[in-house]
Image (cartoon, rainbow over all chains, first blue to last red; front, top):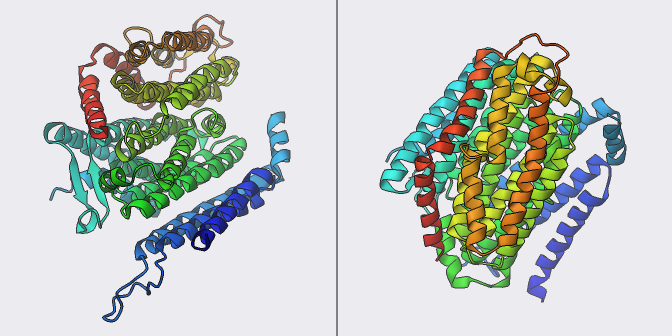
Length: 115
Length: 485
């Protein structure tokens, strides 16, 4: 159980993020939820890379056991993708606020229905 | 080592920043068209080579697989490359006047940049043999397609784009989780490697979870009912050119991913997916067609028709026999032809008459006879009339159902075609049999007509001359099913 604790916490975080995306009407909060969900996935990757007793993956004559560097590298890329997504979402929210005067989902849906 | 496999992606992705730096609308359009056509030529070369001498591989930056990122183009990838670049080139050719009309001048260059990025990234998704590279390319294409959609004239385009962004990112995150879990089980990101190693660790709970996450993620991107909620708004409010491009290519790439994950990575009989896919596919086909009947905006009507057609595509996979797979792969191409022709025609109607509701369509047969002819042919193909491309795919789909002795299902497929007939008839009726308010002839300019009519012609050509499509698709099905066993 203890060696799986990290995964349980990560799954919890993931569900919190997904719940925020679904339950909150405010667009900024939705993006926060989306970020939390993405970050939980980053942590999942880091969890996968962990090797018990492993050293930092820099080659050294005295070490035999390293943690796996590949998930770290992958996650760097995924973080960039995540940042791009959040940036685009924020830009869209600004434009939505200019166009509709609100960033609450229910008011937006009501406004869309009138057209 | 020949650099051919990587060229289409490189050409498109590198042209994008050049367009941005030059920052002139006409130059950007010209470069987009040239890059697209170059990509098409490369894709055609690749298809020829793969047909004659088997899959092409290319190690990016010289790092050999499985350590480096590998582009691995088998027949399925080559076929998708060809479809995407064919549609992408025709849409790019069409784009100039439509974009000039629908998008304000300060943003037109950005449209071409986003278009090239989206186009190049979609080509990257289908070329790559590295599962993480696929994720990155998928996100590049998704981010640029949100941008394309947000550029629509109606302010609701922003809202549609945001909804798509939320659902698309959730889908992408699911795929990312799946990739992580697969990496944890196999220790590799190369698809061929994964497929080999998964056989030894099969049926562990982690692998099943990975499969479920990746399936859900791709189905969200594919917009399979009931995960289709982002699609109608996105296609309705996006600029016509973007609708045409996305409808013809983006969902096809999601379908490609689904086929790739199911058949190549996990193996065709991994989970009892068949019944789920059949149920979702037929519901999508029926519900999509029924909702389409009551629409007043033609872009929305054909967006719901896309939901229904995606249902047919998935239904073919759900049949779990060779005929079903054949129908899906043929329909991928045919549906791209139909929806390309339809959305481009709608773009021409918007360009001349300002909008695409039924009001504009009254008397369209007199006002824009060639455009209306293209719409009629594409509609006939959508319906599956004999002599059009749509007939071939529907024929295989129904045959696949009968092969499995699912007579009821074959009946429901035909019934849903009846619903298609209803909304298609509404379009034809409005165009030819309703009196026009204004009968002045105002046909679309030649650069718009040419790609549109070419696609309409292709709908007929590939309905009569099936040897090319069938030869390619037979090769794909035998390699997919052979590899899965």
